[in-house]
Structures are given as C-alpha cells and as structure tokens.
Length: 136
Image (cartoon, rainbow, N blue to C red; front, side, top):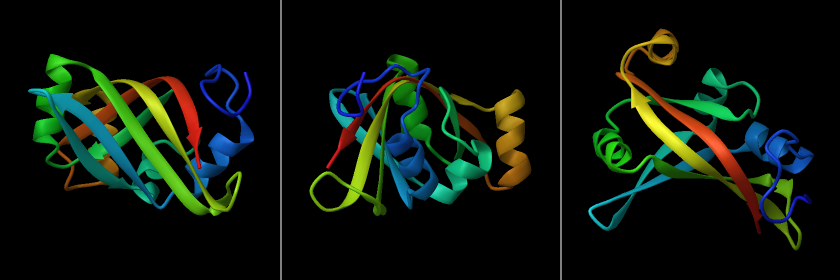
C-alpha cells in the first residue's frame, strides 16, 4: 500500500522511518471512562529503547498510571509523531500515527531495559503497531 493511509507493517516506508528518526516528541493516546488521555515522550527517549522503527516500540514509563489503567481496560493505543525536518506533502513538516495495542510492563525484559537506560522509569510502555497513517 502507498504511504498515504494504512500500510503493510512488514514494509515501513522511508517517510515513516524518517519521521521516527527525526521526531522531537510523541503524543500517546489511550481512552478510559469515555475520556481520551494523552501522555508525551521525547523522541530521543523512544529511539534509545527502539533505535529503528519496528512493529514493537518501547517507551520508558515514569508515572503513566492513567495510561496503564486505561490499557488494562482496553489495550488500544495511538502514537502521534511529527517533525518539521521531514518534508510534508504541502509544506515543511510531516507526521504519522502508529496505531495498535499497548501495555505497561513493570517486570521482564522491556522493563529492565527501560530502567537500565532511564533510572527514573518504573517500567516500559510496550506498543505493538498494527497500522500506520501519514498526516500533513
């Protein structure tokens, strides 16, 4: 499938990879009690745990208590990444959404990896991407 809209996860397009490599920040959305909930993470922190875009990405989890509570009810999650350094279709700036399922892990391989690189982390937010779409 082309870069606009949903894509085959086994074939990351160059635009998605470039956004991943240059994103300054990420917004991570979950839903609970009928309300959206958004937390943020720095792009550099994402890349320290997941150096290149893959079907599973790992985010250091500091507090993320409401995110964890929401994911226990429904594992659905969406991550919005953006960078002005990536050329968009009409102007400077390109973004993408990574959509899938997530869970906060406070023990195990991913949690240990997060705590090794981020002593303040209580664990890791592990996201398994099912689809992606471009914005801008």
